[in-house]
Image 1 (cartoon, rainbow, N blue to C red):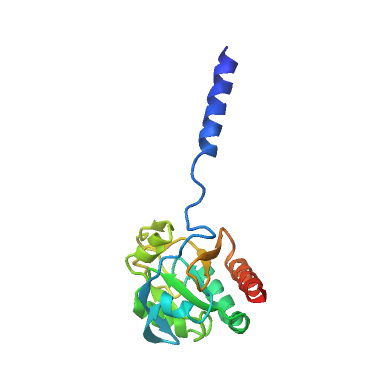
Image 2 (tube, one colour; image 1 turned 60 degrees about the vertical axis):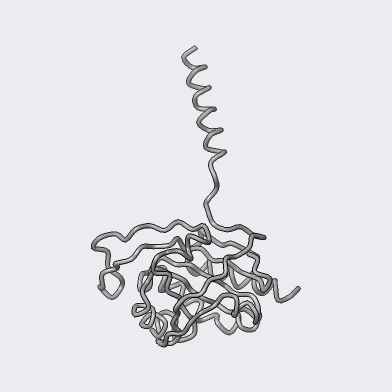
Length: 195
């Protein structure tokens, strides 16, 4: 009887786990929330509008935890290295994090990260990330970036959305290493341009 109760309990726990929601984040086919934000390109601020960007073609909206951290540096630099291929497929790119615009001015101009090619937007209160159903974690006291500067903001989970001109999510890319995330995003926009 004891084994039966344990087995029933285990089965109950497993079925409960199976019914838990998958990782949050907007899914393919859902409407991508339009947003406007202060952004930076090559160290200069400008007002970014997703609606305006979508008039020109698909937009790769990539959320990342923080400027000047290991994985985010790699991801930004990989996007910059592949910028021409994204442009050839008719897609534009916008990075989004909870960094303030001053940090993003430095990040967008740094030759080792965005290299003046990739714009990045400031979502200082995490509202944009949350509208895309992403988890936002609070700032961790004493955490420093790759330059040794303290990070005083929260972190959105690394997730990339490919948004088509009709405002729909064509793909949601999460759980990938930074460079793999970029490679997959490029693959998606190239398939879209081939249609």
